[in-house]
Image (cartoon, rainbow, N blue to C red; front, side, top):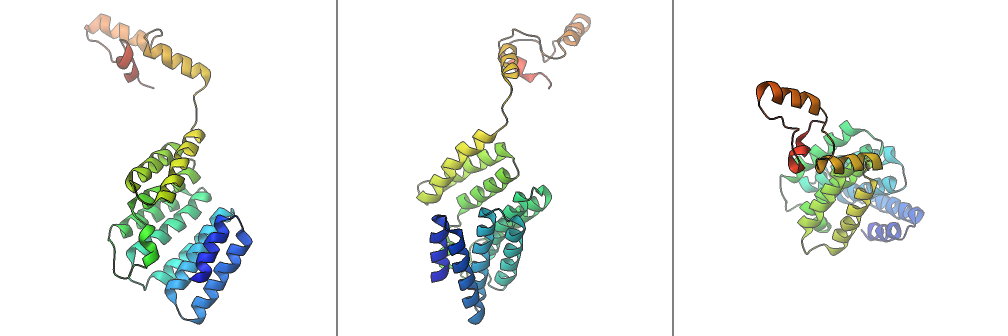
Length: 232
């Protein structure tokens, strides 16, 4: 576990080569000592490192090996975290279907609740972290609206605890919103004018015709909030 902890510090410092060396050392120790828990942990760390360094296929592969190693440990939430590691690898490859499948598996496993077999270090994996990890997958898929909403949910669920991760997801909210597609200046102008009733909504001519023949108001006629109900 010391090599894993040192690897985390190296990764935080941006020393990815050192992190890889330390995680590999932890993996060798796990296999020599026949320790499936440490083996799964080392592979999980290698998966996260692969994602951070732009190697999504390796991220998926190491996460899957980690899940096989952890399958015998009796900790559904440990498996849920590993499924989310796999999901991030798929998301970075742009594979929405496999990302969704891995995330669904992660949420199903997490819902099984804590177990005595959960490792002590897994205490960080609270509902807020699960929501935050989903938001990162959404961002990798360029679903920035959903990513922003997920990061906001994560911050809310963390409440006053887990200050470091809460701060990270708070920063992510701004990043996700910055990446959202913005309407052009012309589209923004038209939207404001429509909201103020200064330009007709799409289909207004047809609406006027309907009013003239049936006497019934159409959804596009009017100002303010009513104008927002116009069909796109």
